Length: 102
Image 1 (cartoon, rainbow, N blue to C red):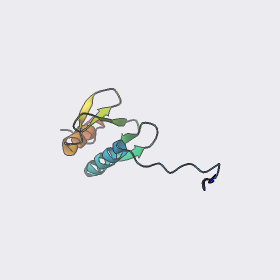
Image 2 (image 1 turned 180 degrees about the vertical axis):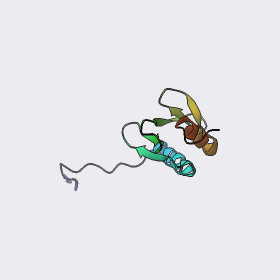
Image 3 (image 1 turned 45 degrees about the vertical axis):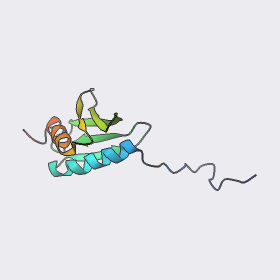
Image 4 (image 1 turned 90 degrees about the vertical axis):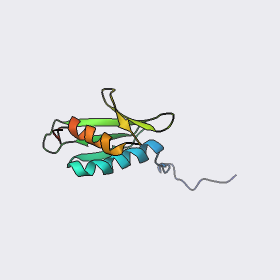
């Protein structure tokens, strides 16, 4: 029987999910708004967006697979946009965390 090269304490390498990839693209789009956007990996990855101007403004955005694309959903359940409209979605999130007035 072949033995695994992985030791007991070593964790298997995780391959980024489709959701992780879409959240990463959205994070890149948010760079224009001077917000902090970090993909948080886990069982269900999310994009944690915060406004450096306000320590209490943080929003976690999740990505859900839909029939033709992926949807971005705010922590309180509101649909923010889709993977096909990253610019518009980023603008909505920036507005949500107070990084833009319009």
